[in-house]
Figure 1 (cartoon, rainbow, N blue to C red):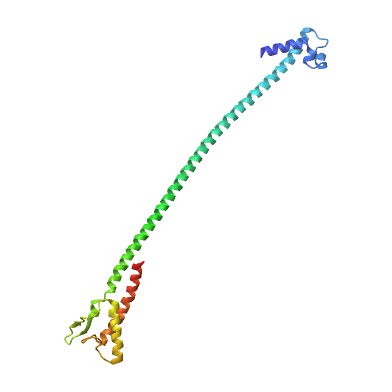
Figure 2: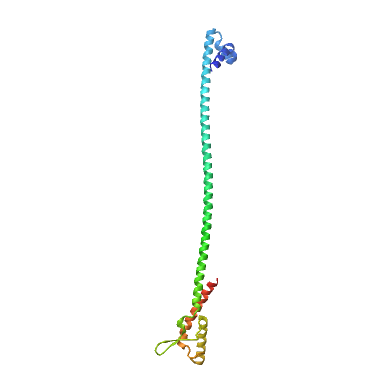
Length: 218
């Protein structure tokens, strides 16, 4: 800085007209002694130096603010990088959770399918067992009539299956209605009142048998 000022003073003394723009400077030092001229030029230099100092301070302030801005920008960029990295990580986590949720959904669907299959198989097993039970005529339908002492007289010829016994009793009633005979193919045989009593029971049983057998055959 001192070298710059010293150079300016030399220039002003040696070439005042060039340094301060011709007529203006010449008018300031015209008719003055060397000491007076130096004094005048020194004051002009002081003014110039003051302006230079102010300019340097402003430049320094601008540089400082620029540095602050650059630091803030770098900080923002760093934070942006962190946010982007966190966002990418969150995205990966979300994708992982989505995959896990999809796997759990698939497992739940598979478990539901297996549970339904087990239920179907269990229902089928129950239906098959019921069909087997319903196919057999109930023991009470083997009673043809009751003796005078109120003892049941069981049939020795009655079919064992529900369908066959139902068919026999239906044919028995048709023969009774046609001929009036209480004997159809056997003697002794069922009585009309017992046949009429058993037929609706066996019909209902046969209907239920068909339903259960259909479920069993699925």
